[in-house]
Structures are given as structure tokens and as C-alpha cells.
Length: 152
Image (cartoon, rainbow, N blue to C red; front, side, top):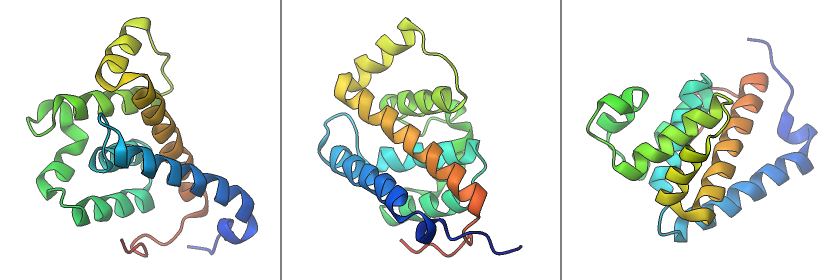
């Protein structure tokens, strides 16, 4: 593969905006009653699978394993609806992530269901998190950082 632009060196202020967003989400998922860091990693991994972002799949798989996630749940993530490994809250977050990543509009019923699971603040934070990983996926797929170079 040909070397691609070093997006971090070329746009450090833009990357800092994305990193600040990550810091906000880290803080929110660390203290929220309805959200958690392990849930956030599952969402990031599932969205990265949908977007076929090899770098992010590698990164978030490694991070999840380091946090204690099981290989069985990571391997089953692409078929989460048919596996009894995920909680109701995890299923709601994964369904929301898939729906938004596909670019689908959100019905009032779906909105009410997800806000009922996560609350308004949790829904905003989850939606921002889904937007963030979609953004990172597009950056990584464009500039192709070396898969396997990430160390948690």
C-alpha cells in the first residue's frame, strides 16, 4: 500500500476537536447510570464492523478485550440479535447504532423507546458517540493507518 497523508500532523486542530469529543464521551460514559465504557466499546466495534473499518475493528476489539470483554461476545457481535449474550440495554444501544449508521430517519416510536432506555442525556451522549465513531471510521478508511499498530 502507498503511504497516505498523515492526517494528524496535517490537521492537528481538527484532530484535537475529535479528541476533545472523545474525552467528553469518556467522562460521560464513565459516570452515567445508563451508559458504560464497555457498552461504548461494543457500539464502536459494531459501527466499525458495519463500516468495514479494519483499523477501528482491530483497535476496539483489543480495547474491549483488555477491559475484560469476552471473545465470545466480540465474535458474536455481528449477529447480536440472534445471540443471547447481550443485555436489553446493550441490544437497544446496538440497534440505535445500526439504525443511525445506516442513515435511517428516526420514528417517534423508536425515539421514545430508546429515550426510555437511556434517558434524554444518555440518548444525546449515545448519539454523539455513534456520530464520533462513524467520523473516525471514515478518516481511518481514507488515510489507512497501519492495522495492528494500535496498542491499548
